[in-house]
Amino acid sequence: MFDRLKEDIQCVKDRDPAARNAVEIMFLYPGFKAVRMYRKAHWFFEHRMFFTARWISQRCVKKTNIEIHPGAQIGKRLFIDHGTGVVIGETTVIGDDVTLYQGVTLGGTGKDTGKRHPTIGNNVLIGSGAKVLGPFSIGDNSNVAAGSVVLSEIPPNSTAVGAPARVVKQNGKRVDCLDQVHIPDPVAQELCALHCRIDKLEKLLKQEMNKNKDDNITERKDSK
Image 1 (cartoon, rainbow, N blue to C red):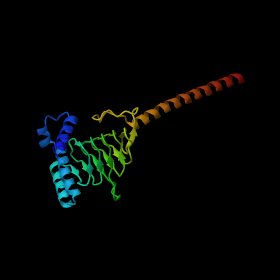
Image 2 (tube, one colour):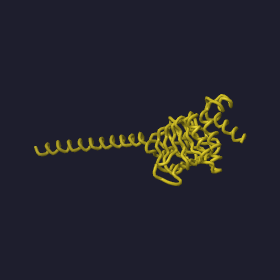
Image 3 (cartoon, rainbow, N blue to C red):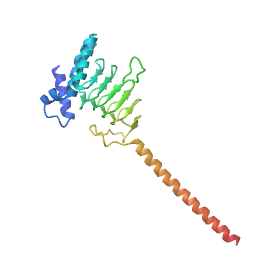
């Protein structure tokens, strides 16, 4: 238990440059408190004391504004930064060394039964306000950009951007795990490509028009 506590504190220190010391993290960080309360609730849930498990999780919501269903399966060193509005559904599975920012929802589509929430791999970052909805996987070492809506599987070592989210790969390399801003925008890239193509077509059209104009002038001269 103490080893897990140390791990949870250390992961906050490693990933939050504003964290000063262990005491501050333990007493003032809602994300840390939510993870600790989840672990208690999950123990009761696994021992089929469902009312107690939900009571703990609902107390956590009131104290931290973070809702983690006690039935979720969460690995080591989960870091919830800021945390306001984070929701993690019952059948969610989260691997090790995952980072979630405020406003993240790991939810279902509202119509599925059984396994209806996402599976998050190891070393995944999900940016603020992102929504991951459905029983699919987000692969290891992947990033989900802030504000994205993910509705289908994301392969490992990828970056998902947009609503609905699209996968963007950067030479097979992962975007810096703490940078939610400097990521490629696939929509902007596509618009840029279309703009370049339109420019080429306009130049070709202009050349054809000039050629036709020259041909008409030549024909008039010949007719005279």
